Amino acid sequence: MAIGIEWVSPLDEAQLAALQKVYDETSQIKEFLPQHSPVQVFTIQHAAQFGPSVGGPQPQPQVVLPPQFVSQAAGFDLRRMEPSGTTSWVTSIRPEFLSCNCSVYDRWKNVSLKALSILRPFVNAALSAGAQISAIGLQYQDAFRLLDGVSPEVSKELFRQDCAWLPGHVFDEPSFWHCHQGWFSKGPDGRRLLNNVTTDISNINDICFARIGGQHRIFSTSFDTTTTLKINASDIDRILECLHDENKKVINGMLSDGALEAIGCSVGGA
Figure (tube, rainbow, N blue to C red):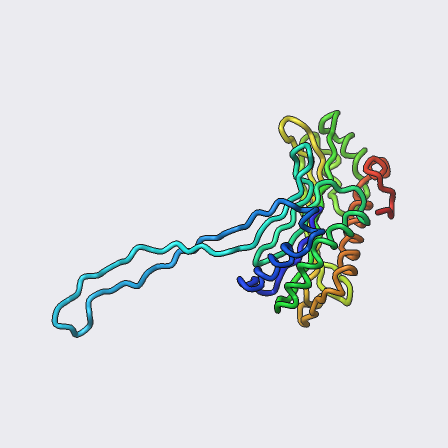
């Protein structure tokens, strides 16, 4: 699961420095995400070129100076490593966005509270420094290992055949299949909400998997895009709950009761 917050305009160096200061001065975040990795970008600046002078007595030879490579700060990554060597949490600060990724998901209530405790100080600092939120997104992926391989019977056991988000023919496919779709719905206060869902049965390193990946994003605009609806820090909790509800709606409507039970969910559950 990942939560992302996008900015209307990229953060400048002063705003990024303000977010760096949050990390330096917030012991709870430093203790939970102790691995800090600065990110640098390189830009090419072309030097001026001098050609023949117009109207001069003598043509001047053209001089082309080599381009200069300029490095500048582009944010940083924060990681929590487990004793096994795997990464369980990653928070990324970039000029365009702020994100928090968790790969040890158990329950929405637990993970969302932890993610928000990490994100909120950075969001508050960015907003205080003049940034504005353009969108908030929730991304997730559920994967099922298919021990019996791919077959119509497996598809019918895993997914609801009357599912509104899967075409009927996939339940008769004897091999791998893929379905990608997107649609807009209304979020809190009539905001525009984009839903993208990708479902597939595929072979990954000679192992059959069924996967559902989704991204739900609410924008700082009305559903018809005619009105700007500013997103404040106080709106984040309600927006994330809405995105989670969209997630549940798809998962509960797509997976069979048996599959929902296998992942610890029930119809209408978290």
